[in-house]
Length: 494
Image (cartoon, rainbow, N blue to C red; front, side):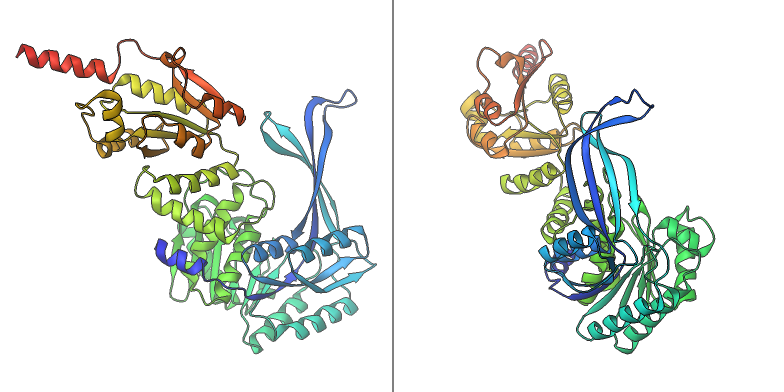
């Protein structure tokens, strides 16, 4: 499976996608929320930074571009400062903005989020301020949009309708776009709005509602896989679609076609922010389907991309490289925790993109005892990801003598890998781990307190790079050497 996913994602190409939808500007105002206002029981936000991004269909455009697709943007925006921000940002990703229609009659939809620092670590949204018009487009604007749609349709590979219910995709306009695409033999993917009536999407190729949206459309709550199946079947038949993809949060996505009816699972995630996950799913599906990918593989890829996205803050893009890294990581995780140095460094880069703290320790771990267990538990408490540098057999012999190790490096690695407190193991040959430490660049270096006087190898490097060294308490009388000597003494008495 992993080989097929890798082959597919690395061969996505650069399909041209006609993206019709509600283009927006997302503004993030960041600050420290460290006190409560004396005027009212509300937090005071001391602004430290402001960031603007493409939102709504603009977010899908940035996702498409990150995957290598070429977005052709069609929508209605205002004659205001936000429209210039939007066009400039889309131009920066090489999106085609010639079909964004300006009107003085409505503002460019914008969402301003006030973000405070929570628990001294995580960003937390405090409030959102929306500026928008949700009135349906007038007849003249509808005519302009449809004219632009006809002009661009023949030159694209696939059509995406991103509906945020802001007045653009009216019932008649949506239905006519789908009919025109069918005549031109272009597939139409729809990310629907929250609405009980989906009839305007009839005849599209694929629809991608989330659990809540699908529940509203079919009239019952989707709480189980069986109810997801029923909802997907209902939408497929009612709307005459090729496929229905209902995204189900941590459970993955339910895929229904005339021949397939199955849950496509995803792996558990540390969800930081679900903003933009649906956009990423639509972009991945569109890029994959435009490239001739089958629906099952396309949904598997969109699950991966959406999963990466929710581990980031805000509506963030996901690149092909990140998807490739994730697929390789999942493949390697099935084989255990032991890594070569190259694969380890690749995975640590992924963890660092999630702002996870890397903790490193090293040792022989020859005859594992309670002291080792407590030591590694302590190490895990110092951060998020624990990397153990394991001395190779030749390295142990140089340190301990020709009679050691008792257990070979592969057996030792398997024993250490069985411990919950360890995330990765890599074997090194040198007598000291300094070269390995310089490549891993840990945020925290842990050694036993018995190294306080001897000097911790790697301390200078770690501290010079902003990290810290922590000395772990040791259990008295617990060591591999002591255990081995005790076994030898018992053998001598027999």
